Image 1 (cartoon, rainbow, N blue to C red):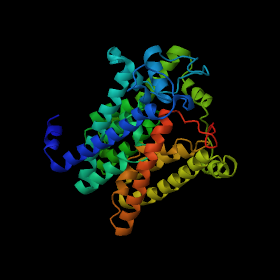
Image 2 (image 1 turned 90 degrees about the vertical axis):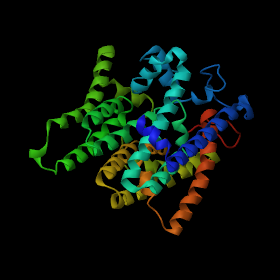
Image 3 (image 1 turned 60 degrees about the vertical axis):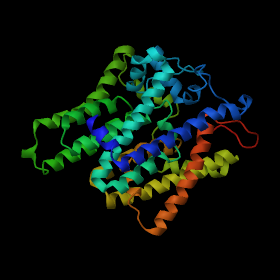
Length: 387
């Protein structure tokens, strides 16, 4: 907290705080305002809470986290009465702990407080790696990416970004105890959390000069990552008798594995089959963003340290081996090295292209918030379900 107070006296960081507040107000204004400007008879918004401020933030996966916080894991979640074992437990547990203020309010506060500290640690990390100017750009590029509104929703993006950036930051400080603690927490936050083991291990081995005789017992703190996964599996075995039930549960929600190119081919084929305007736009947008991240991966390899490239490629591969690209832009949101490398483009032409892209991104975020809050608004000739 002392370090945070010192940072707040930094003029550059105060600008970051101002940008963060502007971003939050932008998302909140559109999310809350949508329910007053869009007729309810053409929306699919779930009434999770009677609170008009909080309900827009409690849609889609948010209902699962809130339900687990209140009712625990079960076999008959939601309208389709499906198992909910693949949603990871840390966020619902935190919601339950602070649920005395009301579950939706607790969840909203956790996400938004975590998003501030995620920005704080990201600023510290990138400032040390690339300097203040690029740290500022990284945060702007992160907060105004089209799916960045998830940092304000009742979702795990904020917690995941906070823990992942903290792992990198404390690994570079050789504070392996905190790396282990944050590793344990991130492994309980989302399935991809275990991926942080590999960049953290690389940083550790580099600090030891890649020499076996210089490896110390503090490497054992890295076991916090697999320990988090094993803890969740052990818990699910205890309550269901099946340690692998999370994977079976995910299949029920359309999550399956395929070759990395299958998702891309799926979206290309969809351009000729799923041709309603809103779905066609979604497939085109997803393909453009996918290829943009593939290009950014190349520049990450060229311009950033190997640990960032390791984290980048592992996350992207995990998404690409899904049978489709649905949610690609959401899942890549937490891959902060992409935004770090974007901040390194200093040429006039690159700056112009990035500025143009982000003007479009802000508009896309506004539209995405409306679609999310209304659970895909029904407009004749424009709407058909993606699934």
